[in-house]
Length: 369
Image (cartoon, rainbow, N blue to C red; front, side, top):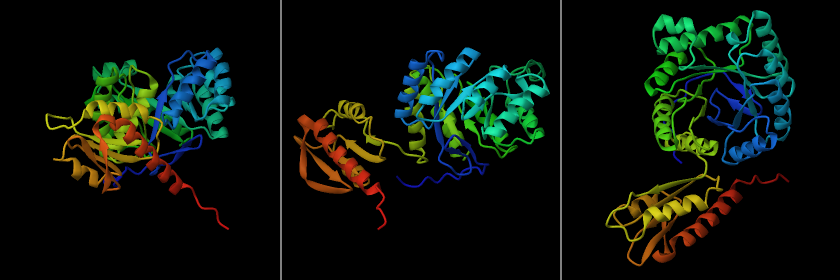
């Protein structure tokens, strides 16, 4: 993968568990469980599925003290750092801090008086737990709704800065901020405005983006605009879909901007009457079969010889469609072997997995004698 031309916005470094956020660290991909948190087994199972898809961090809603007790057991079994999503009740924040949470998603101004806020901030400081301030266009404070009439970038940023000012006053700086909205332009402008005012990392998201297809498109446009500006240190794609799909879309967005790569980047033509094999069926089958591959790799599958050879030259594995048997390329070089068009999926999977093994072997550090 070529290096991305994007210049990242400078920001402070915080850690969510062992995951670095900000200051040039890889942009972390997050998702959130949608199971009942008190169902420990179901929640742990979903966390593991999300982690297997590549998520660096998982957020879990903790709305009650019973959920906090369940969180203790969930945390013990989680393969990735966990963020506890808490609203209003400072006691829940104190409890999950005691149980080893890796980050608190809590707005300081919403958890009561100064004494309660200080207790939570002191607990976070003592245990090295960062905080995420999360502002949402759908839940602005009443006085801001009256002041601005409707959610605007200035309104979202003013809300965020209220919480930021509280943490600044308490001399707590290990936090990240999000200003999410379901409207792309509102979210993008809010983040751009906020990026100029603080140096903490920013957590990106287009909230309540929608279903799998429409939500992925909306998120790709909104997050893509920000990421291309160098804004953003961690992200979540919010879909009304399986959380695993959120992770996949998140990585696809980062991959398309050459920011971060995980798994196979399929370069495939939309197909036309020139195609010598069923391109769409071939790509769909390979995507399903090779979901377990995490090694970054470009694989081009083109149905004819017009663009096939050119794409194959810049891919690690390439296929250029031809009648009966198609041209096969490895690391940009055409091979003598040609692949039978009647059995392409099996043949390509075999070659791709062999290439993966070679790449994995190259990545194993050599032990010093």
